[in-house]
Image (cartoon, rainbow, N blue to C red; front, side):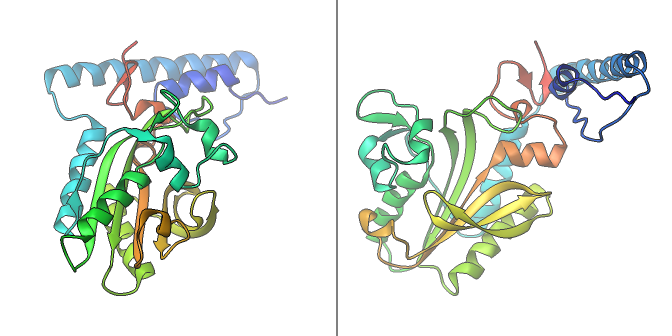
Length: 274
């Protein structure tokens, strides 16, 4: 009979950064538990060293480091950075077809009967790019990096507060699909991850181009004109993409849980402090 790490042991290992997906097997429970204790001791020692190093040599949080790199790369590509409120109106969600019969509606954090915490950047970016169109005849290229909120099931792959990078180019010069592929490549090269593009269906955008790393989705992209555009008074081609930054960090650094990568009072730069 072969033994593998128990679910509680796997969860404990993930909390300290290991992702035991190699399905290690052992000949007995004693051998397994001994291996677990040895591995945990090693991980806890490395974790403590990491915390001490941070205190001696302060640096940016991993999330901020990535935000800064991506901001610089996109500004160099001609994008304008915007910052919009995290509060969003129920009416703005409805323009995105997110009403009571939409699957995403149940994940929205409502703060009263008219407002919610934004589950995405898209409604605000639609508004901003439409207003900027009044000031130029050329392309309108904007991006935002900031928190979004969704009521997610508790897991190692999802956060209820997560950081999105959304970029959009309205009136792009050239083929919209090729443009968005170009922008995706800029982002993924900045992160330092190999990827593949996959066509998928979406609850909001109907058809998307997804970016996957080792089979895991890290981005969804779309092109317009789109059925959502008239509600936002947008009447020309555009292309846009949204990236989950915590998931990108998890994939890049090999973390066992996305909880280690984002805003937290339990982790600091991936190190467990509680």
